[in-house]
Image 1 (cartoon, rainbow, N blue to C red):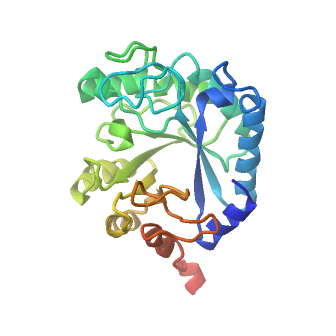
Image 2 (cartoon, rainbow, N blue to C red):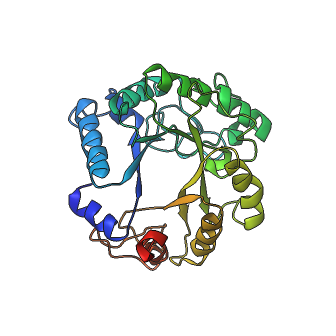
Length: 297
């Protein structure tokens, strides 16, 4: 998370970086050691986000891990703390988190606010209709043992700070299902919402017919970005086809992830923070590094 790594990203011509945040670390709850939470954490986040902007990179700041006990279908862990993915943001801390984050970055519209990484309320409520209602309205959602902050309330929370930043929201099924995104779209006083999807080779929506019917259809009304794309086979055939489709539809995409994991155990773009691409990462690097039409002319 430093200039050297950002410089390596720029050699790939990376234009956008998504910055995942931990709700409890930002707020400095009692679960987080004081040296790493609250103001200390916030200052590090702000410094990194500002460094990205200074380097001509758009930051997407997002809530990745959040508070709330959930042990139901598709549970990531049995821990109430913000140590894994939960199906929806919690009403206890999420509004305070987004008030703080919005206040930190309001006035800098280069920063995009992504309200929640991968909602999956339908896994708890039992069907898509109830899942979409929980997604928008929050409150008491069947199967979720904590009070939920719906995305309507969080959009309102962000705007109450005076922040005019773009707000991004994903759909159901770990942001892989956008079928009713427009039907349940929260109201925004500034009409400045964007949608995002996550697409991997192992997802349900992993073919052109689904991309056309859900993502492409949504993109006719609001901006859409694929804020996570990837495949788990250490190759890039799937993302190549996905990027071809996205390019044809003027939809942007971000590769998961700029970490030095073994790409055979999970999608990782690099094997070294100097920008050395993995076999999987080579696909995104080649695509991002292509000269733009203006560079060719």
